[in-house]
Amino acid sequence: MLTLDLALITHTPQGIQRVADMNLPVVDGVRYIVSWQNHGDAPVPASLMRDDVEIHRFNKTGQSFNRNNALDHCSADIVLNSDDDLIYTPESLIAVRKTFEDNPLVDVATFKANMPGAPVYPAESCILTEPLPKGFWAATITIAFRRRSVGNLHFHPEFGLGSPKLHGAEDELFLLTAIRRKLRCRYFPIVICTHPTPSTGTKASFTPGNLRAAGCYITIAYPKTFPVRLLLKAWRLSRNRQSGFLRAISYLISGATSAPHILRTNKHLKL
Image (cartoon, rainbow, N blue to C red; front, side):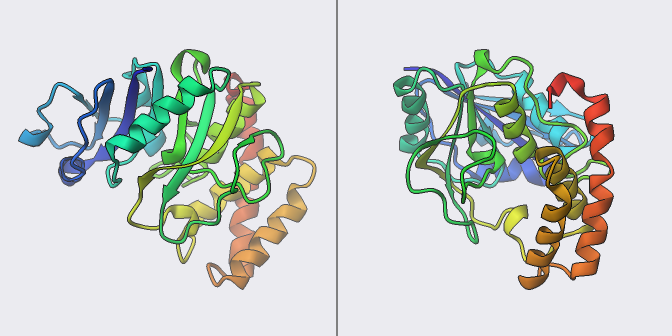
């Protein structure tokens, strides 16, 4: 069976304890590659001193840099992005591996996560192209890929928590970049993990950084229709009481103005 690495990120001494508390299942052919940011020279918990766990201390700031560091240390056939607050079972990890074995032409696969407040996923497997299927929702922890197929595909360092302005949308941009590179991407309605808390995209209120990231991503993803989509996004956030309309549209537009810079200075992403 194909081997699997989980590219797991955490930060601070408290974060490595969260990883220990995950009780990572021991599965033949599965490894946990942990990138540990802001570690403070804290000791590694004894429960993580295992042959199937690698811990790489990392000093650079930014969530996407942290994710990329984890990816760079992975060497398995399949890589699954992971966080420090998830619940896995041996069966769910085997399901990821089996999905790629049963679908040898798939380069990037997305799955389902049990998560409070998550939108309804599509009921059936589907190919991911532009535009994405109606109702489809991407989250980093549900994205896996065939390592040798994706080349230098990484998370964009100017997106995600800890970046200067754009605090989110790194998962959507990762998947969009894969699609635009003509990688074969597919969604599978298989639950692979449980996320006990809501994600950034489902939380009750949006920060300015969240809104700027959304505005920038919408502009990159929909260059012909982004003005209307920004207005619609602001209206929906206002209707759902996640932000006031004027506040939302102001920060969404601010994020949109970053899109030319992202495209101009990051041509290796082939957006």
